[in-house]
Amino acid sequence: MKRLVFLIAFGLLFTGCNTSGPSVDGTPLELAGHDDDPRTNNNHPMGHHDDPASLLNPTIGNPNISTDIAFWGKYAFQGTWLGFRILNIAAPGNPKEISETTCTGNQGDMVVWEDVLVRSWNSPAGTSATCDGQPVPAGFEGLHIFDISDLNDPVLVGSVATPCGSHTATGVPDPDNNRLLIYNNGSSGACLGIDIVEVPLDDPASASILRFENTGPAEIGTRDCHDTSVILGDAMLAACAGDDGYTMWTLTGSGSLEDPDFLYDVTVPGVSIGHSGSFTYDGAVYVFGHEPGGGVAPRCQEPNPDSDKSFFFFDTSDGTLLGTWVLPRPQSALENCTLHNFNTVPLRNGNYVLVHGSYQSGTSVVDFTDPANAFEVAYSDPPALDPFDLGGAWSTYWYNNFMYETNITEGLNIFRLSDKATAGAMRLPHLNPQTQEFTID
Image (cartoon, rainbow, N blue to C red; front, side, top):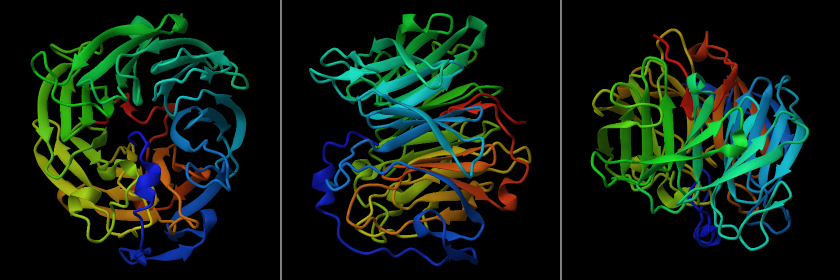
């Protein structure tokens, strides 16, 4: 989601009604689940952690909306507009909050690694801003580093001011050097590339910027990176999604974790705000998504062009387009919607399946084993918010056989999918969704 300074202006433009379809490939809907949202009957609501919030509705009076999420073991680390919360998800039917930390730089993207949590501070700090009770210098934008060894009381131990702020952050573990690297994506839109930040695991307070990596083959970059996706293992690739497409880097050969090497650049027709990406676990396909309207506009209506509501599948070897998937359930003019944050399911059988959360179109599962003929497996699609608001699924990710939807105005929703599409999915010890730490042959 881009900066939300135009929320109210966009909100005043929304009119219309919901036109969600009745089934997916013949699978009937059930009117049940989280807040009685329409869904397919292979998508089962599990637990819910209620955290009502709103940026527009004064009757709620709480702007601490839920944003992105990461996982370590049985814990979920959910970003919020005003900090982050830690939840125990050992029982997916009954998630329990352990603690909540205040850090008032909005957006709240985060990376978790062992006892370290890194959080993005997205907008220039005001004169009275604080993080974990400590003053933040006026104008600060960048990263905050927390010690989370005590989950009941995370402690701010350091910060890194970055030249263009921090809208999103991607963790890149480097165990050979006992450090965590952060590929930092700026919030100002003025930097054509990424900051590479080093967080020493034995001294996270000493985190610092190593270098800046531009997105061009020469000294001048080609795009502002909104989000950077990484796959390690045999693939060793990183992709920056931003502006009108994406840039692919290699992290091996002439490239390295701290000095990615430019491979190629792809412009995607119909795209102006490249947003998110993910790889298939064999490293063969890159999934690209964008965010027309900045996440606050109703861009999934029937009249919108397909490019507004599509995922794009590219061959990672050369950037050839292999196919697209278009959201088959038109949303109303009252529903902010783009295809937003997602990840792919770690499957051993060679199939390709992704799970995504896409604002007021909800949570959806897509099989793109054949990228030219991708299809929807399941979904949960809430009706338009009443009274009008900006909301829906900021992101939904697959983690250890459950789907975790971080919902802007609701909190955390958990689903279980009963479908052969994800049979045999691997369990992971942890997950930072923008980072795939291995490949599956």
